[in-house]
Image 1 (cartoon, rainbow, N blue to C red):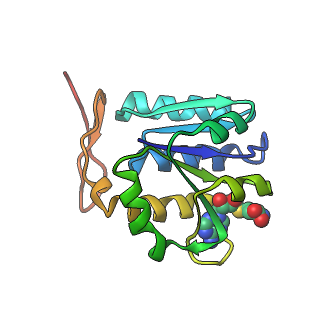
Image 2: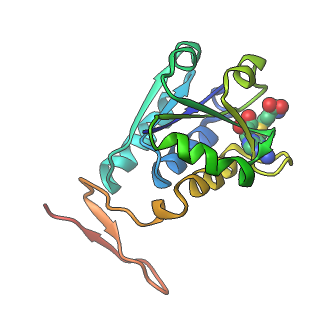
Length: 174
Ligand code: SAM
């Protein structure tokens, strides 16, 4: 299991970013996203996408990340520009993930030091400042070694048929 924990949602300002963190988590193979703060708008958007385009993918909202982080029975990875290079540490993280669930933490504003301290790995996708959405996408693709790009979606009511040009969407009747 891979769960993405999105810290520090600032209402209004972070709505789109939080939504994009969860949509990217869903599209690229995570099982669940946990959003901290007043993120019910993002939750509704992602649930709606999962209803239409399939799952399974679960998104929940919580007031505090601390209990989840503290009690996580598995590996904790924190994505941060100050961390160790993704290309160096991901093979070892992948090994651990074979037998343990993985909590993948991304920030928004300033991240408390306790998160760096609790993480088994602090991982940088380059040591340049950029975006939690981009860092998440690169990390998940490295973790799954590209296999996440080719998966079946369950309970979708529509499916995109890839086209060289234009758009084609099919209703799925099951
Ligand atoms: N100013 C914040 C700080 O110093 O912790 C970081 C803000 S950044 C816009 C939001 C999040 O994007 C970070 O918490 C981190 O999870 C992620 N992020 C940004 N750049 C990253 C990088 N190079 N590697 C990994 N994650 C990164």
